[in-house]
Image 1: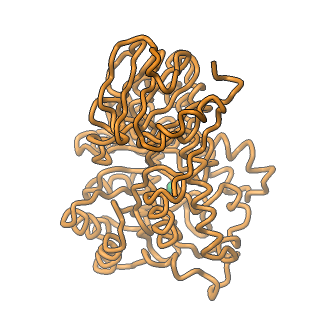
Image 2: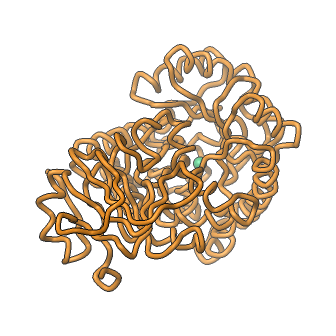
Length: 432
Ligand SMILES: [Zn+2]
C-alpha cells in the first residue's frame, strides 16, 4: 500500500496521476546536477517513475505540477547517515539497551521519512548498531510500505572490541548489550574477513570499517588507530571479491594513511589528514566524506541536552579540524562526497552543511554536485540517480528562488519526488 503525502491541497486532484508515476513537472529554473549552469523553464515528463523527456517549453494545460517559482534539482544524496540513532541519545547511551526491536524499527522508519522529506532521496547508511532492523526497514521502504530514501547499507560496523563501532558503553550492563549490535566485532584479519563476508551475505551494499575511534566514545581517543592496515586489507580483499566498496571511519593522519594503503574507497571524517595523506587520497582516487557542520550543532545544543562535556569538546575540535582539511582537499582536487553524520546531526538538518562547504572553498555548484552526481557516481548509482537527465529516475526536489545565490534555501526543501512519487508538495502558503 503506497502512502503518498500531499502537503498542498492544490495537488490533491493530481494524486491519481502521481500514484501511477506518470506526470509532467514544469520547473522555472533547473539545476541538473552535472552542468555548471542552471537553465530556465524546463518541462520534465515522467513515465513509470523515469524521466523520459526534458523540454524547453512554457507551462501548458498538460502540466500536472507547476513549479514556475521554484528551482528544481536532483534528489539530494547524503553519504553518511545512521537512522538507528538520534543526537540526543548521546546524553544517555543506556537507551540502546532499553529500546526493543519494535522501538528501533519505528525509530529507523521515522528518521528515514524525516530524511526523504528534507530532500535526501538517496542515502548511504554508513554503519548500524541494529543492522537486522535496518534491513527490515529498508525492505519495507523498497516495497512501498513506508516513506523513505533509497538506502545503500553497510550493515554492521566492522570494529574492534570496545572500538568506535562497538555498542559497549558504561551505561549498558554487559548482559544487556544487544546481540544484534555485536555482529561486526573482530580482532584479527581472519575474523574481520569473516565478519565482512557475513555482512555482505546479510545484504550489505558496501562495508564500513572503524579504523580509528569515534568522537562520541569512552575509553578511546578520537584518531587513535583501532584497526590496523592488515585488518582493513582483509576487509578490502573480501569486498573486492564480492564487488562492493569499503569506507573507513578515520580521524588521525595515521589511520587515514593505513586505510588508503589498505585499499579503501572512501574515508569518513578524515579530520587530521596531513597534506601528504590528502595527496595520497587524490592519487589513489579515495573519496572523502566529511561532516563539516555538526560540531557547531553539538556545541550549541549539546549543553542543553546534557551531553558529556568531553563529547562536545571532541566534536567541536574534530569538526574544525575537518574544515581545515576540507579546504585543503578541495584545493587538491579530491573527490568530496556530501556526508553529515546524521544521527549525530538531527535527521532534518541534512541540508545545513552546504553553507560551510562553500565557506571553505567550494563553489555552490560544486557543493550541490557533491550531494548529487558525485555521490551517485561513487555509489555506482550514476545511471539511476544524482542528475535530472533523460533515462534516470524521477528523484526531484525544488526550492523557492535560487539556491546558488543563497544555499540556505536547501535547508528547507518545498517539494520532494522520489521515483516519480510525490513525497512532499509546496505548502499552501508558498504555492501559487
Ligand atoms: Zn558516522
